[in-house]
Length: 287
Picture (cartoon, rainbow, N blue to C red):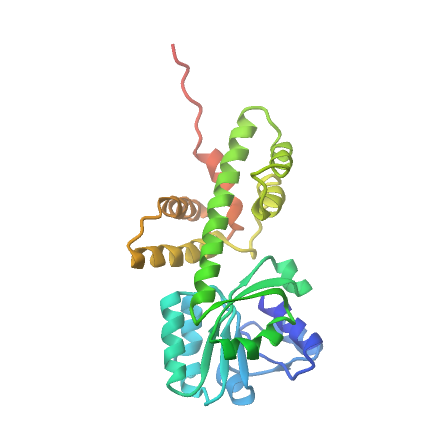
């Protein structure tokens, strides 16, 4: 997701864009399109006023925050915007540490597909003080069409985490519906097309259901089962902190873990549909 976001900033913002990644291939592509290439996170901070992070998880964000990274090299007045889905407690902790140095941290997790990242039509949920939101919103709109100010720092992460929690539970319901339909002689594609005309319709149905579950297409290098479980763990953490029992999400966490244990951790997370049939066994005839 980071590469197309960076590409949109290069093409649309008219600003100097400096890129860094551990993989040389995306950097080479971006450099050919006008981005400059940095040698490290510290190098990015030395040469920029605002830093966008687009990383897989909270542990990756912590890795660039610590060591010879953000906290050590940040200057007063600089802004860090985290576009990934990350821990709310970590987000607020990092914001406090930067504030003590006269810098700022905003959470702006992205939603929608890789194609949306390429098209510049992402949805972004921002957690930031109003003045900081006003500063960063124009930049975010170079790669997003829907930008929502959700509240102060951390609020963007809360909103995105709950978006993903609902998505995972919905995809599991679709996987179960398709499995039941298939075993009862109803074509899964017809089922979901019909459901899309009624109250069961959803973005998840039209995308994850029709394009992945029905077709059995669960590629690697998409939003993986491992990533899904990581995001769901943040929702479970928020619920635990609030003393809430969220049994639906807890069950989906178990289902995701079972798919990972079965070897599908790197596959696109609707692969949980494949494991419904794998778990099903013919019942003995009753007399």
